[in-house]
Length: 213
Image 1 (tube, rainbow, N blue to C red):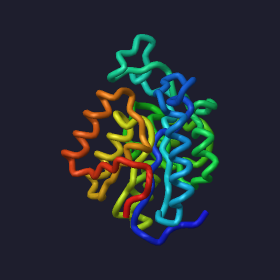
Image 2 (cartoon, rainbow, N blue to C red):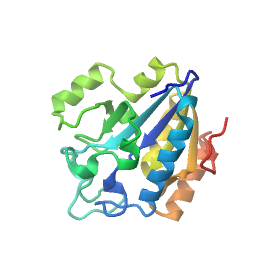
Image 3 (cartoon, rainbow, N blue to C red):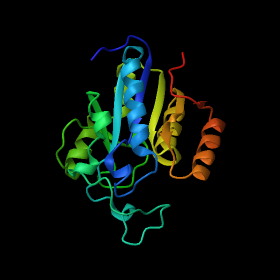
Image 4 (spheres, rainbow, N blue to C red):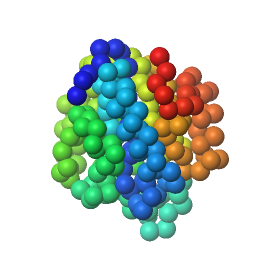
């Protein structure tokens, strides 16, 4: 994998079968956006200092899972650690990205900055997660260690985990850009609200699927 020499990273958020058509918490257009992200990443690898993915990797996330979800704070079972649908979508997995941030193991987590770097497929214990956090194996540490000051964010869902990852990134001082044509919301209404909130936070919204300098 060719690694860029600039200060920008690409973060691919939660592009997993659990969130695409046929998954437990399917978002319409998820498979198509996965393919577009694949093409974008292949065309632009050399522009990025690093590329990282995030995944829901739930073990026992408490009330985040519910048999009677409200689809606001509680959800059907999804992103269950160790299951095929929690793996990366094949279109993203085939990119061979070396950095994988897994989140939500034992609590709700929407932002990639709440996760830990975990490049395996094992089901972690609570102690495993605590040790990873104590060791600083976080997305923020990964980015700062690579000298990254700007992040491009894409993925699923624009209205939820893409939004929260972007908001956390700008709060940490990164220059943040979100590509809306490389992301998909749960609904058009929620997507518009998320874009407005991100703009108000100072995040650059790019409406297109071609790299912008």
